[in-house]
Amino acid sequence: MNRREFIRSTGGFALSSLVFPHLSFAQQDEWITAFNQNLKIKPWLIGWQGTNQETLQTGALEVKGKIPQYLNGYFYRNGPAQNEVYGKRYHHWFDGDGMVQKFHIANGKISHFGKMVDTHKYLTEKRQQKMLFQTFGTYLPRRITNVDKINVANISLLPLNKRLFALWEGGSAYEINPKTLATIGIQSWSPQTKGLPFGAHYRQDQDGSIWNIGYASLNNAIVLWHLDSRGKLKQSKVLPIKNVPMVHDFMITKKYLVLLLPSFRFDKAKFMNKHSFLEAHYFDKDQATIVWLIDKDTLNIQKTFELPAQFVFHFVNAYEQDNEVVFESMRYPNADIFNAFTEVMRGRSNKFTEAYPYRVRLNLEKNTVIEEKLSNIYNEFPSIDINETGLVHTQVVSLQQRGELFYNSVAINNYQTGKEQYFSYTQQLAEEHLLIKDARGNDWVVGTTLDYGEKCTKVNIFNAKKLNDGPVAVAKLPYVLPLGFHGKFING
Image 1 (spheres, rainbow, N blue to C red):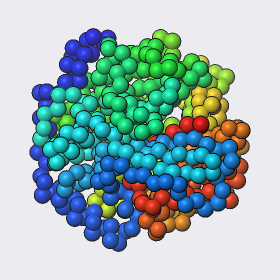
Image 2 (tube, rainbow, N blue to C red; image 1 turned 45 degrees about the horizontal axis):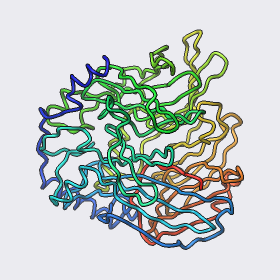
Image 3 (cartoon, rainbow, N blue to C red; image 1 turned 135 degrees about the horizontal axis):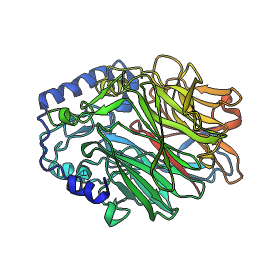
Image 4 (cartoon, helix red, strand yellow; image 1 turned 30 degrees about the horizontal axis):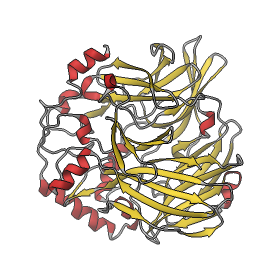
């Protein structure tokens, strides 16, 4: 299927013939009641309460410890923030309207500014003062003419050539002013690719160029993207596939794009028959998970491998070694994690299902697969040195669940040597932590936590070589930020 045929078949992602089914507002109100009741006895739920503020801002924050001298820059984060819209509560953590957070670190000080992304959905509902649009896990009876009409821009961020983009899963990138966080608008990488989905987890190659994917479930397609370091489109391709799997992330090596097609597939007929987008997905434990190796020059599928049924949100990295392609992932045995993200929105969940780190070796000559489980501890949100993308990486930063309550620890693992460091927070829930370098090339780990005891968000900075010792600096915000997903650090 070429792009012209794709657009012709979709009407540029037109969904004008689709009417989303009715959602009982009484049922929605029950979700708010249930959440508020549970919040009284589960203080950590405050991270999913959400905010109705368009902006949040402080001056210099209270800092315990000392911020490293040569660590200066901007730590951006993205995530769902408005989890309740005009008296109605969303049914899934992925549903809320996106808010971009900016932490400015300079001269030993940290300040914070957060702003909602002015998407079409957010502004339209703001004008009419009511929930209007279906989302990932919540549906409403409204005709949608374009997927970007329901784009919440709430997953990740792409800094590129002094520009900043808020990324979603199924639609376009939204450009954001990196200084003011004002929304500039939807980004089209070319007139020919306008409206094609641009995913949340890009990969930056060694030459600074950007690779990305997007999945279009209603249109039976996966889209491949390659931008140069300035943000100019180099190439794109639409790959047809039935029952599109939920491909949240992917990897690159020197020669290949590595796509894992999990056994969590989309049923278009079910979606058209009064079910949300999430409800229209099914996990087939008897269906193999497929790995595609795609040639970076031609964007053609070169090799196909099969793995046991599984689901993966996030990959660590991939690289080529002798006659093998090797990759590491945080693997779930099924898709039950989505149920946990639903239940937490009404305060009923306190533990995510297990994701374990795995290494997979794909032998290109023998067409064989070797799998190795790397740890028996739950791990998620992996981060490596961005300069090692597509190469053999040395260490992996991740969140770990050590105890009964969500992710409460940050770890650094060298899976080549078996060396591990970790630090467990007390009465705090950890968000993604990043491995970054300062102006002198020193490694630091930076990440946010929700301190539900003190009812505030904190920014934590660790010496990567001494993670076990705890943070060298902790900055305390005077308020709680809604728990989010992914971030990026820009030195400067």
